[in-house]
Image (cartoon, rainbow, N blue to C red; front, side, top):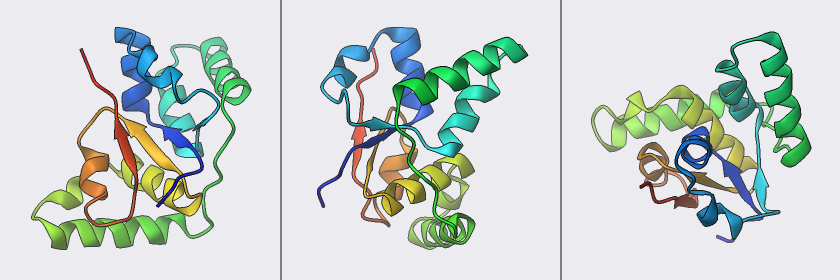
Length: 135
């Protein structure tokens, strides 16, 4: 399945911010998207109203927004159920990752990430993932 771009997960964005792994993402310039759940995750760590507005404004200025499907919660519940039945305890995948994965699938996008959760999801959904190297 070809993807029309990539949702940038917080796990990858944080590595870029903290570790300077940006060169790996440079090849994806112009192909990166943010979704509403990703915006919530990034804005959550703001330490003031001004910082919140700055983070939210930067995200919207830099990245196009991938829309969430109307039935996002139902999709995420089905994904969680499928993960529980695929391998024991995989249903404990973080809820934001379930929502981001289903948003990516709905928009025919992949997910750029730096953790194991999206690789697990890709075992039960046709999700294309790209893990950035850390360190």
